[in-house]
Length: 216
Image: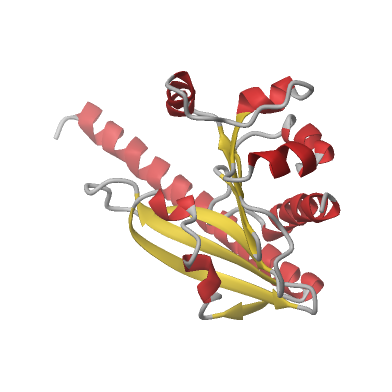
């Protein structure tokens, strides 16, 4: 082995050790943050999630193959059941490491909401609109309508009740997914992952839920 090759391998080894230490530090910091969150917001770790999550055709299950739900946190009160969980999936058949999407699922005891799917608008959505697939737009919220695709089987209800305040908030946000059914709602952001702190995403999801309930 030449001197240059030896030096090159040494640099790679140092970089790997440094990267490993940073990753370990982030995991420890996240664990401490997660423990504080559990105590402050009265969540508990559980081994299973409400079966209601699987009954409504949520698009999170289309993210990839071999989907697993892990790291489930639950909070139950008189008004709802709230779960925070990690959905782990293989983005393609060759992927050796699973991707993680962290999400918030809220189940209500009664039918409180209306059905709709909201997601970031993609080129695919624009192509579907070009051939007649209807997306619900709001003339007074052009930025929202440009950033997000909103679909519902009850267009009239959405046009009358979808909260203006929520659209104002989402105009400043990227990557938000909200999938609402009458008795439950699934919320996530494509930037949420296994080391995303629980408190900010729970606070954000709760705000969206409250704005939706206030519009009923």
